[in-house]
Length: 398
Length: 160
Ligand SMILES: Cc1ncc(COP(=O)(O)O)c(C=O)c1O
Image (cartoon, rainbow over all chains, first blue to last red; front, side, top):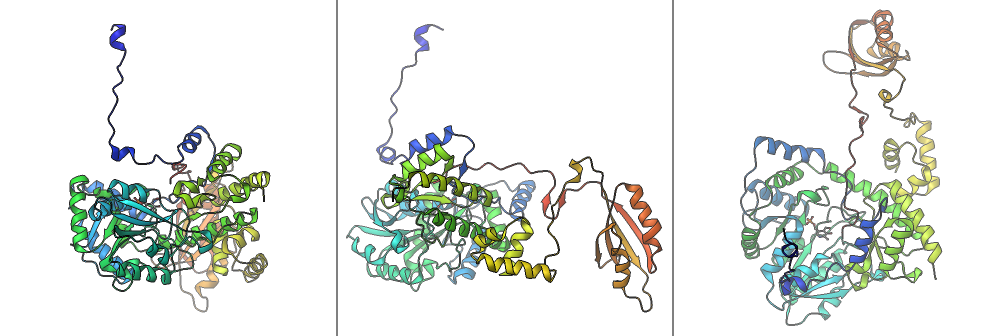
């Protein structure tokens, strides 16, 4: 081969504006750093440390052995939709028609994308809390909508406030996107506040997208399903999943429950882009719903022990930390160090080998906070707390 | 609550009152008090380790022995069971339904020792009609713990 032909001409690839406008994860540098350091204790995860309960894995294995390897109906296996309808009725007293009001999706992630694409037109505004799950804004943007962040604060337990929502409504507002229990804050919403948001949605005829993936992971409080509030089923796109409660992140199964027209529209997009959710994943999800919730209850009890340990530990270090009542995150303030969240996370990683996620990755109001996931062993949590104590004592300004 | 404390101790007998207090949100003094009381009334019998003896030089043989009893006048199963469980060789003794009446877990240094125990002691106890000895060849899971360490599952270190 001659020298000339060995030289590859670099072809500039065309990347769509759509992709370009998505902000790369704000903490690229942090991720690069992370991959270069070994032996860390990570409070940076976003998933359970349990493996999927055995009865669920077993059901999926059996289905594979039996050769259940074909496509399912676009909307999801009929038995699964039926069981899901029963489940939602039992849990929240809401009636969803399994044939027209439920759609099985590739996690809440896909359901979020479909919901936006099915309901937003160019320039439609979507109100959402800041800080919140990283995918929310991007999904709105991909659907040509405009995310309108509403600041939430530690002082009000990171709840989004109905009056603030109303103040941000314009003629272009189409939807309110809420996700409680919250990633990253661990906040839950009180029923009273949700009722107020429902009133705003009704008054301005808005759709509420409610991401309730963490609904099972609440501690000492009851989860209120937004769609179960009076007259709200017609206004709500309920997004739920199996990833967190059943420790099934890798299976990629979730669902959307919504009025018929919305599900029809979402199913159209899903049909052309996804066909259907993996069959074994759906079999596993069916078993999760049918198999009872004993293992869920055990996992929740276990998370709660670690939650109490980490919150107490963070407070003893002198970091202010509001009481997270849901999910598996604590969201302490690190303002006393004078560092930005990203500086804090980077320095903590290099000096003490503890990984946490800078709050700023989740929005402007996350600045000054870090997300600590306590879905990791108690001994690791205790060791991480020791290292953080050393670190904070060294840099404390106030 | 006591139940919360017991659950924690059952999965880790070494959890200290201060750790348990942090995990439950109870005051440490209360935790200590409840543990003391549970020890006194024998709700907590003992704290021990689960050991995989196969990994040691120490030879240990285990056998399950099914025991059929002859109902006797004036002597209940409880007192026959007591005659059996007083032997230190009997690690666990249960009254069960089905083919046998008692199920006894026996340990010894070798098969011979267990065989001796069964033929010299157990079968001579008044009321014991029949025994069936099943030597344990391999232990897969003990008290909820899988003997051979399962492979550690790798998670992404950071997920947003
Ligand atoms: C708030 C929130 N919504 C949705 C998801 C995605 O869930 P799924 O695994 O169902 O796609 C996550 C995952 O971290 C999350 O934290």
